[in-house]
Image 1 (cartoon, rainbow, N blue to C red):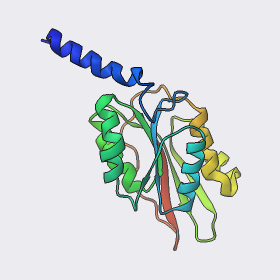
Image 2: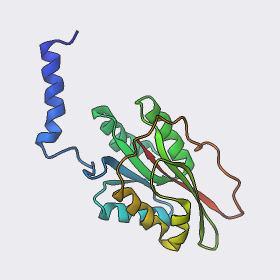
Image 3: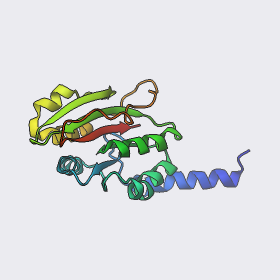
Length: 188
């Protein structure tokens, strides 16, 4: 049974961020808390710069290691309330965040794979489309696909859909020689 004291402590804690102007990092148009990106990939850096220009807080992930982003940004946000996050990262980073999100009732609602080829081009495959962006729209964007991805993130609200099961993040496709795989995703 909740005591009066516990109720007042919870209410005070919940009201404090609102009284201070909102929860830092939450984009009021979309509800996304933070955008994560793999800092070793220039395409992910371009995605992050565009996301910042759209009003998103961003955090770099270094070589797929989510530790700092988890400890300093995502976990504190999720301790307050289940908040959505988005990213352009390695598949390993998505896999880890997905596992951590599952216990909080959050799921991957958008998942796309981006194969970065040695010639500078990219191939795109949308795995889970709880989002309006298609692989053909990314392909048409050419080298500006990271910016198109960030624009789409900023223009959309979180999808209302049935709770999907696990994503395919743990199943990496066979890659051509010299290619790199990035994944874009939204967990909500």
